[in-house]
Image 1 (cartoon, rainbow, N blue to C red):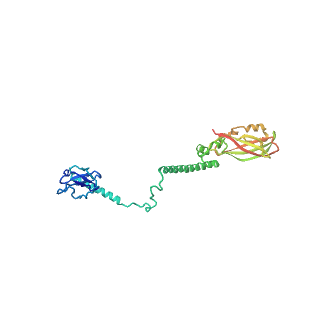
Image 2 (tube, one colour):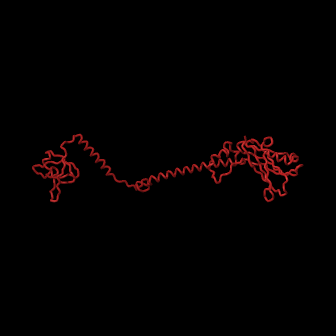
Image 3 (tube, rainbow, N blue to C red):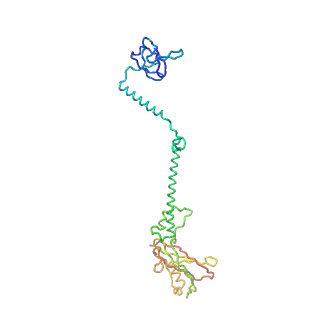
Length: 317
């Protein structure tokens, strides 16, 4: 007998004796559709109940591979569950497929097409790295400004800073600011020494003729005591050329009467006393001042001016 698939309409030639009177389940070998096939009624072998077969044309292909499925029937409960499951699936897929596709352009600029405005992940990571690098640069700049301001205040107004906040205490932290080619020489102990009340005058000596005497005081702004402060005086001619220089340790001074009576050898020897008279030049406290004096003899007539500077000092004991 001839049987037609209800889905793909393929016609199969099946031995009618293989079918039960109540019908048998068969599977289409082409589309896999499962349907019920019934034997012909009243000897009509080319008709299937509820599934009429169209007239066969000469060129219609008839296939013998119609697959019979086992006669056992599924339990009623299982069949009902399978049917309910299939209905749920059809409902879900129907809802999804029936929803209209959203128009991204009408949804606003916050939703962009997939291939527009979206940068690769690698580029986003690099931007994050650059942002972190920019933050580090800003923080470093702020730190440099703070340290630079503190260093400048200490350098120009050290008396406003406590000893533990002195310029020397900041030097270890500011060392990274120095470059090898522009590194400044080490402090010889004069950076925070200040000369005050400097004046020069002539004194007539009974033994050595006329002296030229430079007097003044040296003020220590170091946070810790200093010792052996050395002062240098230079005599310049009318062309600004140095014609004689002489060193003297602070703390060695003479009265006007002593300058008139002492020899130049005694005076020069006294100026070489490192500790100074009465040890004035030893452990000079921070913020203290001590006097100094430099004496010259046998000066030329071209004497025009003089200059004074601190040469060195050493840390106190």
